[in-house]
Length: 234
Image (cartoon, rainbow, N blue to C red; front, side):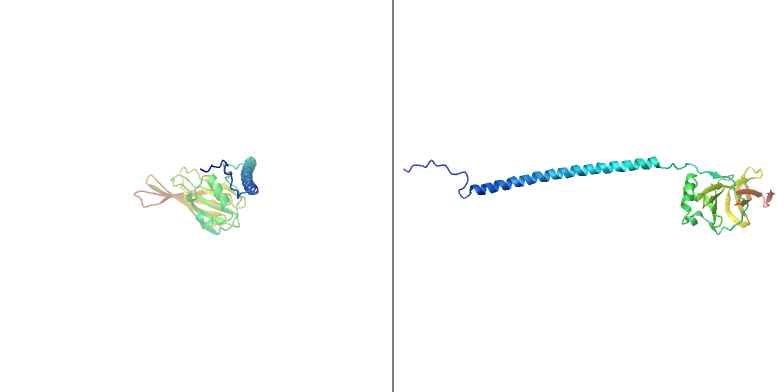
């Protein structure tokens, strides 16, 4: 019976030399080193990105702070002149609804002031613009019978408002105005109508657009059961 050999098998096949093993180990070491380097580089890039974001956020906050600090506070109320200007005469080349003027360069400032005064464009029943006079005049009404005439003058060159002074001649109840009528020199005829306690009233005014005054000139009225118009001239 043959005696078994006590010689152990080699750990690596004889075909793998020490040099080959060194190359394989070196490859794994280099690959792992590259992986660690890439991971470290990615972490560094993320930290750099986070730092840049924080810097940008701080810059934006700083800019916002400066804007708020330097912001000019806008007035909440609009100063309204009551009666200004002499007797002047010039033509109003265009009249109608306020929407006819939305493309004029002065309209945004007018709209801003209307908003501050809480005047809705739909409450403006008539408006007229004069290029020569640098103004637009308009009538507002809310539908109340004794509201009285409300005429505003807006200077398109200075963006100032003027609320017309009402010369009522002692009348306690006056009609809201409808539309601008015909112009004679510096005077525009305007009328209004109201219904009170079964009677119809028609009020006649003269609007002086230079002095910005609305003056009552006549009241005509007729009550139920009568076909006759009566009038009071002022």
